[in-house]
Image 1 (tube, rainbow, N blue to C red):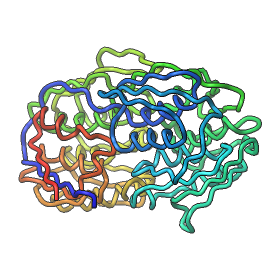
Image 2 (tube, one colour):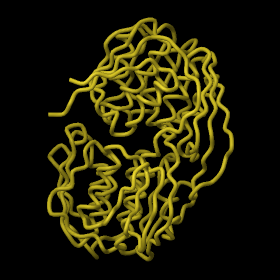
Image 3 (spheres, one colour):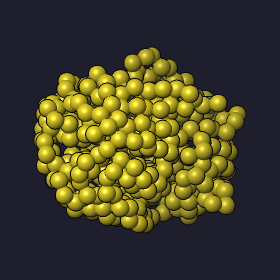
Image 4 (cartoon, rainbow, N blue to C red):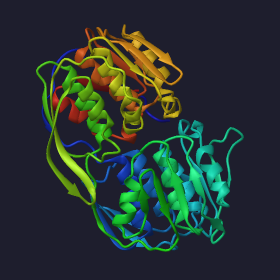
Length: 439
């Protein structure tokens, strides 16, 4: 029986100090996947030792890859080459990780063995047809439930996949990455065109491993002609994890926080752009390139935020940060309006409805719409809110305590460990009055 964790936050306070938040989850997943397929030994530092990324690591161990965990985010991967994976003896369990399931479905479609992908209750409800349908056009054989959800039963089709020219109906880095990984095993060229920019960690890291991906504006293409050569990867801090403190230090009076070594890939910085449009005081310092990825230190000082209409072009660049951006909106002067974010309804939870419900419990005027939310900034009160097992919602409501007028209790917070196991320690070190209880 999984333990239930409840967060309790005392209202008020400020955030002060410096921190290095957890390693980037997207890059941690991809470092394991590509390091396993590389020739030679890949060394990773800054790896996120949280449940989602560890599920990916275990999946590749189950396919015969030797991976050493040396503590403090250091991982050594003994690559088996592009065609060296072995059939797993049992279904690959991917916990809560949609990234693992969607990317692996592409990677495993072109192998010489069959495989089954399973996940926890939340992952088993998430839509998988967005990857299985284009993969079927490439010749993949993947069975889902009638609802198009996991478990995924993949029949290996080594040598039988064919490249396609796919125009994505929605902006999704997971779908793009899935098809590019399948394209490494397909005859001819696989081209993916996206309607709006999404995170490009897969393309950058493939090129870092020496595997050619051609990127032209909103199109990425790949062929089976290539190999991956082992490299050293220093995973930057996850901007999605930093976002909680960017918002927290913006809304809490007398706050001044320095977040070290944060990844500022331009496909991920929507949260900084949106907060700056709202009037946040965020400085980007010490910019540098590490392993092909732009990194910087971020200093944020408290400021009075103002409500805005969030530009739709920024939505895909901040899709994971909206739970905490809704908290920023609740503290801002005036109205904030989000449109074009229907993707939030099929995340770990329906993030639009769950956030609106929680904000309303705390006395905020938050009206959900089909593709976003309208929030009237004002006072956040106290109360008991339900996270529905969604890690980002649990952490967002914890940050809300900084501006609340009474304590906030957040139920069902165990899944914070899927993306940010050090959240509670870092948050309390910086000044958040947060305790947790297990039951």
